[in-house]
Length: 218
Length: 51
Image (cartoon, rainbow over the protein chains, first blue to last red):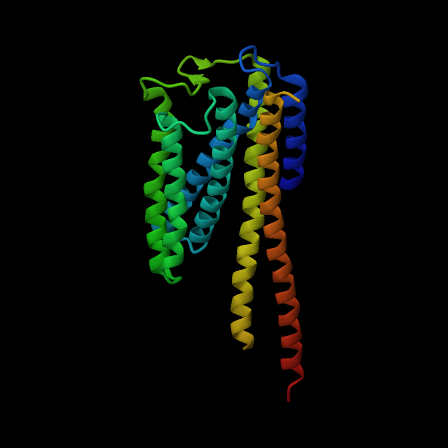
């Protein structure tokens, strides 16, 4: 169901990006990277946010499933984050002539957020499984979520920048057709997250059940 | 093909390859789990036939 919806949304998104959205007068065809790059970044934020929410549920309600759900969401977030950095770097090369700019707050803060969540896995796999590891990981995931608004607002707080700002306090700065294409791309990316999240979670749960069964049969 | 077209194609290809690699990894993990289930079913059958 979710996977089917994801496929339909991606077909619609690619059709809109290449056959409906107008070509940007300044950047030309490369501006179309925006339709995947920004939804990838927003989906990465959503993954980290969802992971933090599940971490909070673990600490607050002691939900036994929340730790695994938080881990899977953060894993997805790191994948979407890596794709954001890769597409952003390609876009930077064609637009600014460089693969990376250390002077850009938005870029550096997103990299910091990405590396912070990469370190989550180092923490998780350096501690033996159990309640202590779940608690430590939950606290770490909650700390990381504080970086999301900083990363999002960095471009708006920055004094000098070359990174474009599309969403301002006055609304979106693009045509209606561009905005519609962007919204479909964002929905497609969020549905991809929902699909991959449910598949990975089902796999992890099955793995845990099999481990339990193996111990019972041994 | 212009430079702009090349870079745009590369960006979309990166996303496609990234998602494809992830799906392949998940598919291989699911295959491993299927083999594990089959092995445990055999083990359970053997235990059932034990006196």
